Length: 359
Image 1 (cartoon, rainbow, N blue to C red):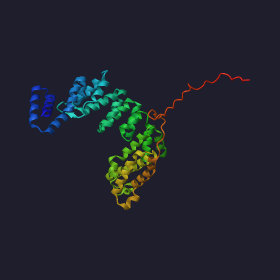
Image 2 (image 1 turned 120 degrees about the vertical axis):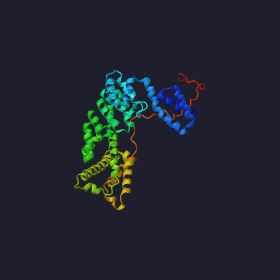
Image 3 (image 1 turned 180 degrees about the vertical axis):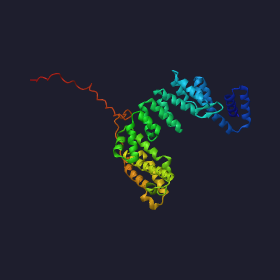
Image 4 (image 1 turned 180 degrees about the horizontal axis):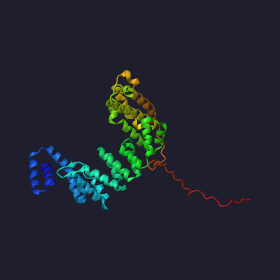
């Protein structure tokens, strides 16, 4: 009952800010609503509480970034960019709820997009850790693209490592080119399209081998590849042709997807990316389950996966290389102390000179 009262009380108070009506609403919900309703109310209150707190911590203009009116949002961003404290304000906006709340007239997604844009336009290097954190958490494509753009505008080299796994994404590659990594982007695409050995060698020399492998793994995890694995006859995709323009375009898409799939598997072998083994085994199993047994031998994906696993598997059993970092020996057992030497206090003294002969 207490939970119901407080959930109704705080929710109504947050919405209309009338104390007496909030008390009445809390009592009504406490009496009539089942426990599940309380949980729903409480979960819905959290974003509102964060916005209430933001009203005290942020200038009023900052909350206008989440206005439901697009024109107000754009005007607010222009005004914020002229302030000396714009960067800390925009960083705090990224801590506000990202969802939409019509009762509070708050569009969190648009507020976050504008905050990221503002940080990019200000080239705020102190914002890079926050943008990287948000990039790793968000699932919104347009949010990722906006963060890619902002990281490119800021131009901080520490963003390179975060952007490399997104090779193949147009906006991520634009950002990497701004950061001076254009040669490696070109090498990635030469490997993806044509298996150029010199290109994969260049990628192996790059300081971000693990991140490059993650980019090839992303290719293999794409929805197009997942659909391709269900095809019965991949040889028809490799060698097929069509007179219809529409069918021809679709066929070209599947041919390119198959080529990228096979070349990505090959590249992971060249990079000695043993972290890709679980994925390669999963792709192989899915492909085996999709076609009759008598077609296994002629299937290009099965053949490529089998060869890749055969090469990479032995690397998982190699001994780990010795670290150049000194080992901590503070917890190792110490040698036992030497026993104390016996006392010589009672032994006869040694004469200082030889005794004279007694005649």
